[in-house]
Length: 333
Ligand code: UDP
Image 1 (cartoon, rainbow, N blue to C red):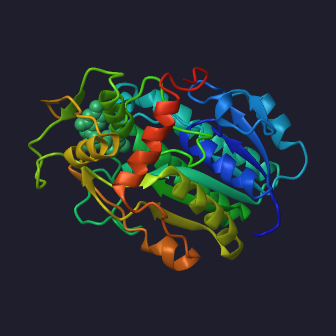
Image 2: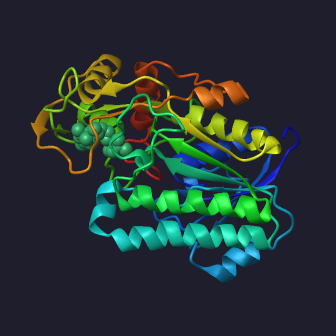
């Protein structure tokens, strides 16, 4: 799909969503964002992009928005996204993520939207038996969060079989970094992700980083994750959107490299030139020891490849954004 397209992006004001919005905007697509701004930020978006500030559960507004002319695609990012919280509130996650995702797909079919991209997750794989994780690795969500994304993936399968809705399920591993031009970055409230927390510890914005366990069966005892730059993820969405011309796809999206928690801390120290105060505490429930993706399928089928292959470069872009926005959006330094 090389022509400009008109797309609706749910959750487009969030971390990954806003980077995808910028990528679409940069190539001249018409983008409308649908976001309740509970986690998202208006300032993360290009000023020219229309924002429909509404709940996904608000069927009247959703229907009215989808009824406004022809949409080439819907990109669905809006979601609750904390694995730990989903273990406390399983039904909330299953209805808010799974249930509302299913209703959105139903609405897309009614409004004859041809293409759908789902922001899916490595959390589908629980504690995988083999590494790296491919698209054929056994699915076994370790949490209601992962299960809620699986509900949407399965619904898309049926929407394609019965209604010919073309879909791409993009299973992200650990999204990190920030837009190279500083237009968007990571600002979760509260922040729970490793890289922004380690950066804040380096900058003195928090006293220390707590390391969740150093007794895992890994070389240094801390968990290994596959950190992928958010702008590389954004480019993968463009590649997937084009690929939908040939049919529906499901891709794992990572950098293919694993880094431990201690390696992330060392990287932040190198890049920032500051030492990071740290304290080892107990394991966080539900954390698998190692999650590393194989992204061979999307590479071979679309030519996509991550531009940020070094952890230090991912960290440097996140650090630059945080230095400019020490209090997050709306409070620039
Ligand atoms: N982690 C940590 N301390 C923190 C936050 C995260 O040790 O304050 C670890 C966490 O246990 C996991 C890794 O860092 O092994 C990445 O966690 P994050 O929450 O960023 O992403 P997840 O892999 O859970 O999606």
